[in-house]
Image 1 (spheres, one colour):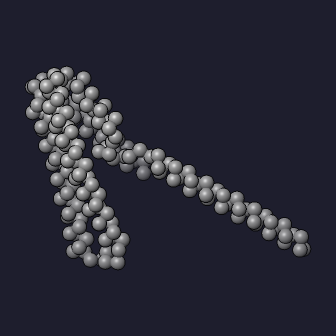
Image 2 (image 1 turned 120 degrees about the horizontal axis):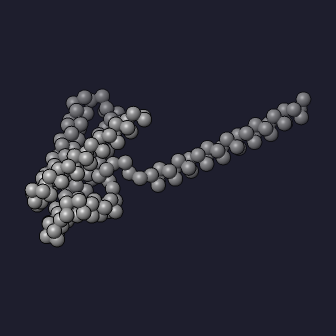
Image 3 (image 1 turned 90 degrees about the horizontal axis):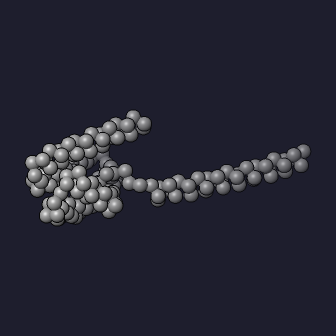
Length: 170
């Protein structure tokens, strides 16, 4: 009887050890995937994506050198401004999340106030994006503007389809 208990004890220890090793490996894999995961937010793309879009506009719109310089300056200014706005938005989101997870989260007035601040800031970012597209459009000829309009419509349609597919898979 004593040998049977010892065998069960050994099996239990080995099972527990195996389980702990598997948990550690899974945590390591999850951390690796999380660290190496690409950002899903379209505005958080790297410089390569910006360069690809820049060359795409150059090819699709058949820009002159002067137009290319103008659009480059517009885009550079826009991205700089948007980076600052995104940082502010992230800070405001962090404040909201801290409040919601904090002890005073039941205070509806404060919660609504913080949510309004987020909404106003996000609206400001959206407005800046549309102003940016308008600035770009104004620097184009009429033919180029028609092509620009179509490219932007297709781009937005693809993003909406991608978003719908992503929501359907949740």
